[in-house]
Image (cartoon, rainbow, N blue to C red):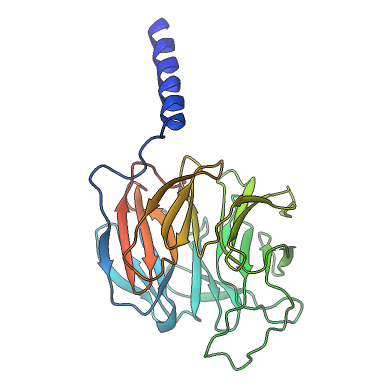
Length: 298
């Protein structure tokens, strides 16, 4: 018992010292960016299923690709209603922000599409962009306005660019925040208590406290940096994109920066067999980077 107690005390002390004086190294030793492919128009929306397989969008070409844990790259769906951000629900359906008609849709494992949200009280959304599904099944999504050349209607029907929430088994989304100028990247904590949303126009990222009914409190500033996409690791570090990948600890302190050799880094997520592969979608390419930390459980 005394030996076990000493071990636990030593382990706790080691963790505290490691995080206080430079923190545990996030990137695996001798790891470097590995290119999966560079054959796309613009990659976005990386999401991982419960097996660790990566799915991502080539948004201008209206395709969703799959990169499995064996290293095989293939097209999952060739017509996606212009899907952008992706996230898997607990049933294995791929939930996507589809801005062909500004909808939220569900794609089952066989590729069958079901529309979850079509509009807001009869008005078209600006263009659902990114999403996160909370542990209780509720869906948060951002709705910035980025005009598309395939739209017939060029002006938004909804005033403001906001964050919305779709409760589990609901068909109507509700506005939960109009605080940001142009919300984009979004991710929540695995306990469902906090939501991070990037304001890409104001170059800031905020943290919201999530109430039991899914509503959001007034946010607090997390970092003075915006982002296109967000993810989180098992230690609670938040990953921001744009100029490469910038990693901040839960206190909002920059602890790592990953250089990516592309004009723009759009999004990032964890996956792979052991959930320790960082997948990065950047311009026309997709990269991997092996990490010492894991993403949150699938």
